[in-house]
Image (cartoon, rainbow, N blue to C red; front, top):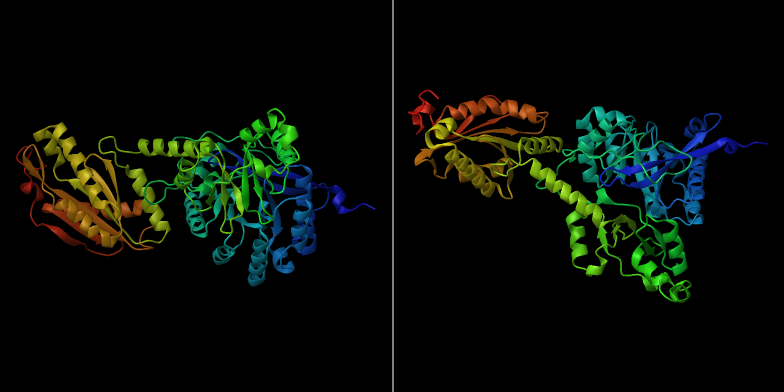
Length: 553
């Protein structure tokens, strides 16, 4: 008698790190040859639980070292209170629970939320990682997504047509400590959109289709110079999460012969971590140093049956919330002959979640510096408008109240005509330096071209910043020069993006330019009127030291 398992096959699709181009995990997908076993599993939690175990075993038979993603319906977890058979199967296959991520699949409607959260807590306690799947095309409430606190959020590829939604999910995930993956990426344009919206991981036909044999090499389009993702507050500081690669692990009791077999059978593995039963790194075995010891005269005879522990070093570790710069600090303070060692990334319980390679960090940090330099104004070396407006959009998505200010030099054309362009350029540089000094630790400043600057700050920090610039004596070619500032304060909900903020700012700038002397006008988005904080009434041109050069300008 034939069983439904006789016609069930599994395919594997890689999860790709968009930053490094490496495969970080394999998702195991059921592919029945007849019938609709997945529809039945949706209605039958016991069947769905069995499918999950079979998916694990199918991956194990392929002898892959990569971490695994296994699908399970939300209702299954809530109904069964977890997946005890899966935990037993993981142990039986020699894997660790923390090498397995459960992709919780919708629907969530009618699923008892309390039971689901308790089941997820139980799975997480056993060491499994949690992913929320199908976000954007499913029915998970945002409150439940927040309560699940997943390690990974998988977005449906259709959201790439709505980049603001992807950026908002990236912001939410940063608060949850989760990574963002995009599924269904089929074109290079979609890949670029995922990168620019801030996704760290992706899956789809572009990289590799689901296949019966797991693939380790995938196609990742080259990054365009402008693909920098979602910037953080202040200078870009990449998180170590963006560079995590799968770790090759063996029990701390492994022999040197077992380590040698793993390394010789996996040429891409740069080292092996020896871990205890809880998955905490105890020893780090570097590929080159280990194989050199084993290949020395009598090396195999001396070490093959001895514990690999004796040929390893104390592991270098960083927390999963560390930055790339903190990883470099860990590498820098150690022995120079270990600079090529992988650095183990550990979670709050000190369990290994992967490794990072120094080469990946150096390459990414170099790219970020090139990208930052490309966006700087060549005259002042300040960020351009894109950096500031992107940060404005980020603050709007975060629900923050902010003040956006536009500062420029009064009658700057007359300054250039009267004192020469060299004096004008030096004046712009001087204003830029003064702004940088005034905003340190309080705001962000950008030079958007010509004599125009943008300042993004909290409202309470704005007064000292503006005073530090307006109160300074300015001159060019021996004649006094004044500055004008226009500010719009935006509370949550008053503007939808930086364009709307700029639209509110434009008439305030016109009002500031109409005042005599150094001026400052402040308004609030959505509110009538404005407040004159600096400047006198009258014709501003009559006050300008260069007005006589070209009257009326």
